[in-house]
Image (cartoon, rainbow, N blue to C red; front, side, top):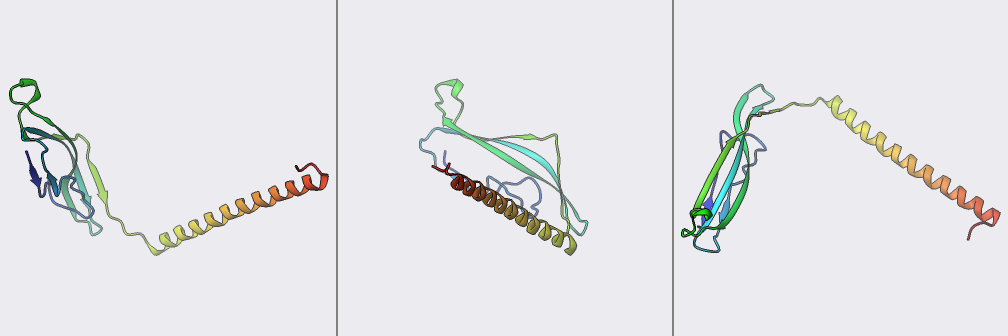
Length: 142
């Protein structure tokens, strides 16, 4: 059961949305194959920076495939089946523009972190070198 899923979505697209089945192209190794797509749909609200609200859905998918022999009833029928389930939870994305001072604070935090780690490494090397030097002076280094 060869099949191609060009596009599958549940609602309007928003920036950064990923539709996991888009462009799915499956070539069946045998004639009587059964493909099951278990789709979990999550309601999503996307709030843009200008205040526009977009109600849509996103989804995740799990695919199972097996050989379906029509003679044996417990193996199912050949075909492509999409089984979906709506999630009771909702996701809300909110676009926010950060101010320049927020950016500057983040940069200062990164620079401070780099100096702190460099100071720790320098201190570790200095004290290790002093300990080794004392052992050499006492003749205990082997």
